[in-house]
Length: 573
Image (cartoon, rainbow, N blue to C red; front, side, top):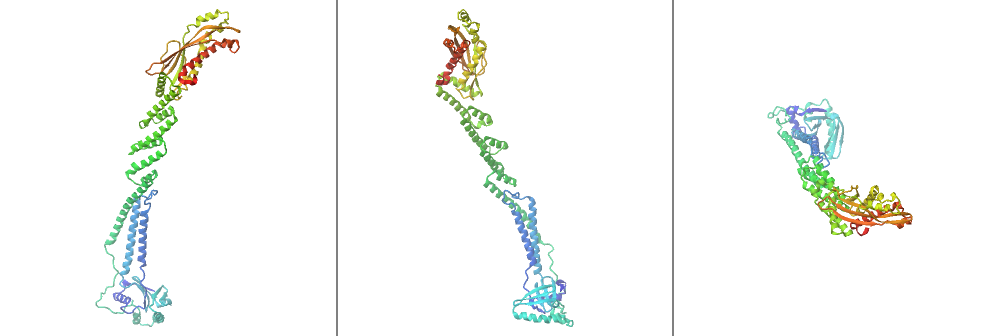
């Protein structure tokens, strides 16, 4: 095998070889291979296409995907994409260079079978495989294959006869080449790469040289610059289009997560951050169904551009809470609503109407249950109005025992009686002092318990209060039922067995209900006498020491029934 650089040959040899490959000179090729594909150029071209494919793949990374961090690509990827395009251009230029290099050869780049052997002229490196290197000759119907020590080559045959002729002549050529006595002129006739000594006087003397690339590769520079511009332009266009795609997806999903993902990916549309995302967050807050969720939203969006929508949602939630409070049917529920949402009461003017309706309902119930007089209804209204303005309002029931007109004088008469049982039986022991206070406490508790059923307890309560010293009624700072009373005695009755004398007890009381408003107190007077139950004493059913306690208990019980009857209606009559 012998390698020859074609462009290093002398000009006459170059021209002789060119003519021989084209069939114009001597020796003529016995067989010529088919035109081989430009594998090198194809390889560079495939690599260039792969670089373009990689560029497209990188360009598509994360496109339109809200969940991808590359939905809008960072500048770092711009460098990668431009580099891939520049690489694709360089590879394409290399493929073009390979094609041009092949097409600029002065001879047809193929494999030729000459009498001297096979000459591989597919590049400027011309390789000769002599007959002495032949290892195998296979002749088929349509082709012949010759295997040499340095390679194997196939040639098409036009007919079977051409194959047989090749088989016969190959032996002849092998022997002639191998024969050391073969003259040079015979070898020149067999070998197109030998100098035959002929010189064309009209042909240049310098050897053919390979074409040189242009000193200023304008095409290459233009393509590379174009690749850079294409990379930048495609990057910008891709991100703009990608932004529109993820915006469309975010709007389609219309959720907090989608809008947050849009902003996290680099989306900068102000309507998303200022309108769409807040609206989605507001929807979630509304879906929770409570005022607190909307309040939290409002606190985290103090300067929201959807303030009107927030107020509408908050108002709807407040009205829902107010409806729930009204449904409980208590003033406590309305007051708790007012205290809990006092910062937003301007949004629920219905609260005032709800309070009025509740209080009206209380009075309506009182009217239907008791059928009070006009004066009592007005008094009840005053109490309800006061209680509405003073949460936790109470009506104190307080007693003040005044000096008796008859107790001291009539006790002297009892002492003069033959039935007098001694000092321990005097009424003053039972009608004054701690015994009287104990009676007041029991009466106050019973009176409060009876009146406590008139109004809802969370609106107004009646409670027994501290006693008031004897004298004029003081000024009260809270609603008060003030019972100013005295015990009188007269008309004694005697018990023969056991012997005793007991006076009748009269309860004389003035009751005033005062309310700290502009209206005067409502007063009523009460007087009732209670005779001692001597028959029960004589029958042993009532101990003598309990006679006056029984009288006091009956006196207060009758007083309470009389006073509360107008308030609680037929139930207590």
